[in-house]
Image 1 (cartoon, helix red, strand yellow):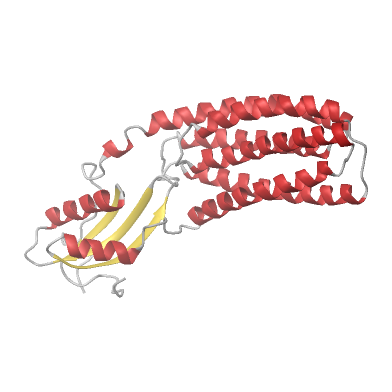
Image 2: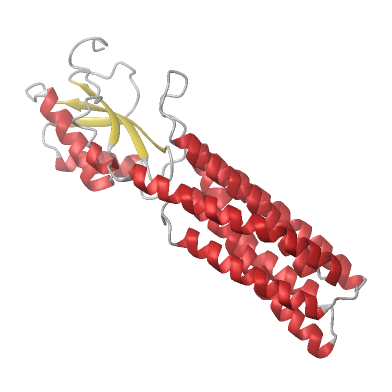
Length: 317
């Protein structure tokens, strides 16, 4: 068994190896995402009241569902905005990684809220199919058209933000659902004005709900995977071990590999690397770290260098 406190065991915590250049644009991107979320929140929240009143007056489920969707979106966007604010707070002794996970938690809550809303819309639509109600197509059409313009602007704000940020994607899914809801309401209003066939309103509400459900489920599943410390897609311990063993001379074994994500964009790795007796620990440490950055885009790794047997005596992964 090796000596746990011997210099053969080194951990990669030096800031030179962390390659801060890889994060040089993070604050600007985060600030831009935060601004886009805030503006989208103001737009959806501002028009929500109009749709609630219009839905009650016209009797349209599509408008009421879209208004409820907008209410959920306003809360979801507020939560997402708060998560961005929290993520800017520095790390402290209680949260050594800072508050970045707040973004992932917000995305998870948003996804759950969307799934709950979809269930409500479907239940209400089924009830209306069995007991149709009168719908005023003219009022419905004008309000739905205004909602479409507002949702298009909000979606543009979010869609042109960071494509890799899970929180932005989750918020965009909410607004996309609103956009589809507005389109469905416009179509339903036109059909009702021309034909008087009111069942089109709940039918289109169900169609939109099912489209929203797919995206909401994906966001919920991905955020839950991160919260459960799951390995990021394309990053597997066996692949990392194989690559390091092939590319770095002097390595005898790589084991105790653990991979997880702080956010969807930032992955973390810890591993043990056993090197040859003649190998230089510092050089091996730098080589392993450089390879993780180059091949797997992991710029935050904790690497324990060993020259003898592993102190934890675990089988190689």
